[in-house]
View 1 (tube, rainbow, N blue to C red):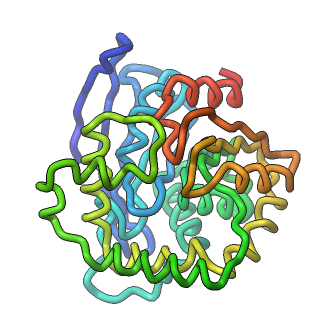
View 2 (view 1 turned 90 degrees about the horizontal axis):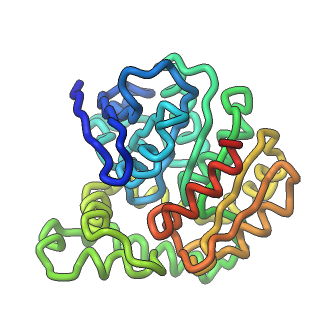
Length: 295
């Protein structure tokens, strides 16, 4: 386990980052705590990242919320630093399985009830978790998620393209000038820090092939189209759904459609942001989240 201290440049406060691994259903999962040292124990907020990424893009949000929460970040099975074992496990890449991973993770860390902030594919996992284990949640934030309409030809084309993208990944991409910027261009409307772009490309190259390709099929599928509207309607915990106005990955209309299914879901659309509103407009994102959490 590694302990380190850092200080954010915009706020005079110390942030403690404590990292570790824990075995979850046969897979070592990387996790880290971001909190303020020397303070009393606070409510826990767990962060769930999206496809191809890792927990590290949540760090700035977690640091900003560490005044009020002990923040738990972790890498999904097969992504980031949560490596799959060489022996073939019987676990599938269905999103319900990832929700089950989260339950086992929380139990393993002896966390009875948490707040949750999840993003993109991770927000689909978060929505499923909300209906599978509502007793584990105080409140939930779903960032950039919604309801898809099924289109057989479009889905087939997406899966084919996604398969190629995952198959043909090379570490030398990181040495190509402007590669991180080009890689992130489709996800952003506003610029983000250069180091954050590099981190995204690094995480994409690091993702396990089976996990990355498997979740392409389970997150965008006929089953998901049929299942997710029911799950959104079943959510019983107070939930905030945040969309980016300019998001072309999961357009805001899809978020609006999901929110209309349940009066437990509060909907916010952030202007001039795309698929990473928490990084494109950090101040507004934090304001909306804190208002929802009554901070």
